[in-house]
Length: 124
Image 1 (cartoon, rainbow, N blue to C red):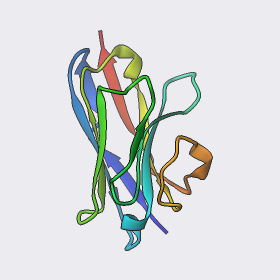
Image 2: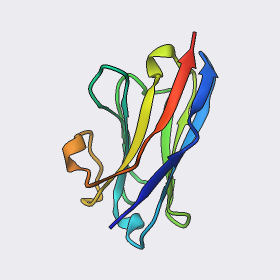
Image 3: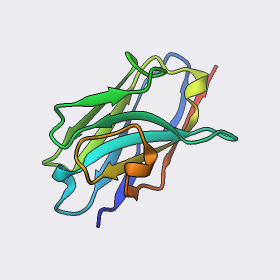
């Protein structure tokens, strides 16, 4: 069982930056791939970024590539999402999720555990 708690969301102006954190409980965190997803009001949940269990492999949605960076610290049981050059269309609730396969995926159905989400609002 893994419990995930996101933090770091807030209100930021377009062009600004935020760093989201996701703290995980449980001894098996280092074996899980971790992903970030987001859901804007009235829209479906969409993939943002994922990182393998070791941190050696990352994937990004095209919409955030070059602006967002996912990383993890297995010693701290934490995964991060550094967001730069934020745009109003990045406004959403951001969720972290854990994938037991360890490899990471852009498919939400492969993630077994989810956090409650942290809200990001980007003003124009």
